[in-house]
Length: 321
Image 1 (cartoon, one colour):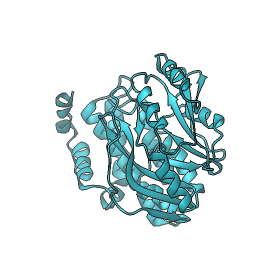
Image 2 (tube, one colour):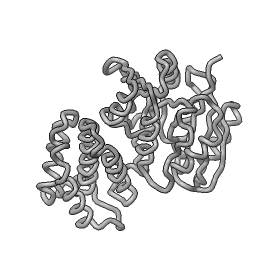
Image 3 (cartoon, one colour):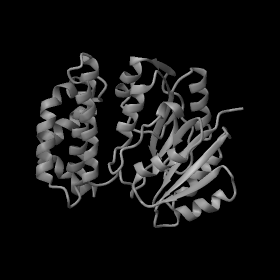
Image 4 (cartoon, one colour):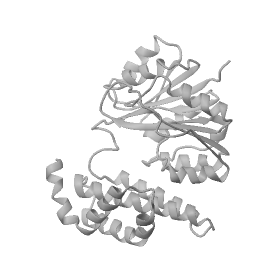
């Protein structure tokens, strides 16, 4: 019999999307699933909708808890899960019908701890066929740690995890960008990882999502986590890993500076102070960023623009609004 796979779905404020999300999970070609919907104290009807859908399929179980944020909800789902493998799907996203099957088959066939596909940010409502962009690749030992950086893995939602590998690892609560430290710890423990370069997870561009819009204080967690990873490798003897981690840290500073420049900021952000801090930090690490062949030229040009011509680039903010 196929292994039981637990799919954890945190729910908060997604009544417009939860039915589509759960339908895409119920329609999976891989059937031996338990679907744990974690109601994180949502104030809309998302949990009610999930409960009604659960009445039609015994694989769905809805767990209610006070609001604690995305990390708290995922951690609660992990406590409730009984599957041998774990998958995460956010409730405003959806997955292709063979998402689980492809992950599971490749993980088992290659005797791996982790399997990963690609995700795509979309505005449409139904899964679209996407062709392979390259060869399936298996990483072993230290290659797994290198792949975490080289592939810039920043999401847990396009990954299938072996449950006993997760162990006591949990998402840090009260902080956004929580996928990064979670994956960093797990990839640090894994011995084999298979990367399947095909799009099977669809990240819906929800205008109300916490990951969109002007810069806010929660987004500052992203470069903080990237800096922690860089400092983990700094001076440890592996120059390639150190440079890649440093480049990703610099890239995070550039990305948030571009967001600040083009989309503005929430009231709690001091634009001048944050901009100055990002610029000073980027200057210390820009060599690793500009020398990184894995970073597209367009990103490097954007960095020149937002760090050296910020006032001029800021004029685009009105246009984008």
